[in-house]
Length: 373
Image (tube, rainbow, N blue to C red; front, top):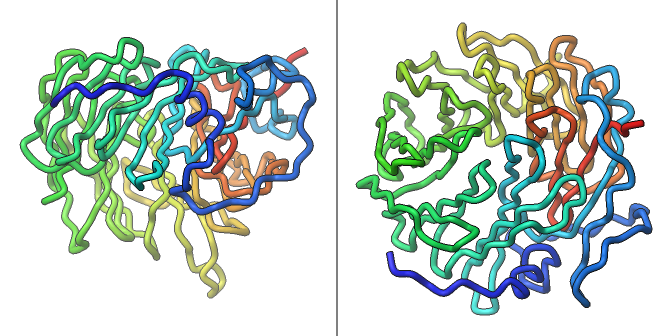
């Protein structure tokens, strides 16, 4: 792949943090009229700056203290596509996708400090790429070229290509494992996933066995280092990346686009309507991956559009078109409801230390925590 000049940092800050006036890829959302803290950090003229943290994080979030969750920091964003925490919970990466004036897609990755959400590093991908994925190491990104046949692993700090991966097929879904050590590439032509060692750039495995009559599917890492999730229409399966053992199918009642694994791979949460008392009702099904049986069901008041397990798997954050609900998984009860920003919650992610919950809206990123003393 040819080296293409990167955009300057000042333009990047306007693109990622300010959102500029670029046409939106995700549905247009009316900004919330919620009240904002008045303390702001200094920044470049004309560039929105993050709200300074008004309190520090306290204990890890639990069902007992979840009702105390408060918005600690916010910053303006534009069309977020991916949220990734660093292993030390000291930064969060936000991948965005926008359209330029000539309608070409513009991908970028902003690495934001926690708890201030101040930009630590802002990277703009070269023009012409199809997809961008960020690693949890807060420095590596994967770029799918315009032909969809090669993936460059790039050091976002030096903007240099570390290695180029050639899976031998047109790639679809691109995901890093949560620990950033493995990259998955799905094959657009058939149900097949190639796994690559990120450090060596070598292909380590080819996963297959998922069968579907659907014309498209999704497969990759969704919450766990040990397994990938396959999804097509209303069918999901989990596959161990070491043994390549494929679970029995999890059959939902309706098309499922939102799902995630607990970090230990033991539970799969999948959002789709379920028939409850004869009525098709928004719900999240909790599946045991070892037995392929339904271990629980969360009845919602509105369809889920984002999901995230807490690191220990005891909590599940559910984002809808107007709020976040934090559920206690064991009791299947709502521990907290966050309605401060009444807009669609496109992305959710708990920090690895369990003290923060990040939520991404079309135009804003918010950090939630239980206030420390």
